[in-house]
Image (cartoon, rainbow, N blue to C red):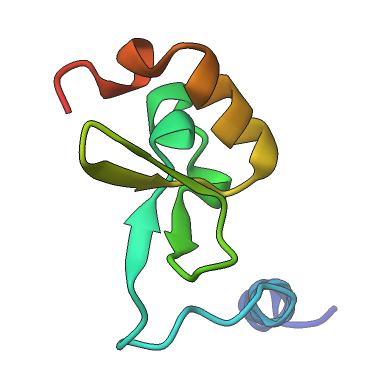
Length: 84
C-alpha cells in the first residue's frame, strides 16, 4: 500500500495545477459585490480591465465576474450595496 500522506499530497497538488494562475501583484483586483453578497467565493475576485463587466453608479465603479452578475446588480443595486 502506498504512503497515504504522499497520495493525499499528490492529489492536492494535482488539483492546484488545474486552477487558473492568480493575477499578477500589479493587477487591479476588485471583488464582485454580487458574489460577495451571495457568499459565492469561487469567483469573488476579478481583475479590473476595460473588458471586465462593470458599471458606474453614483460615481462608484463596480466590477463583476460575469455579465449575469452585472444584470443582477442593475436589477437591484441597493441590495448589493447596503452597508458596503
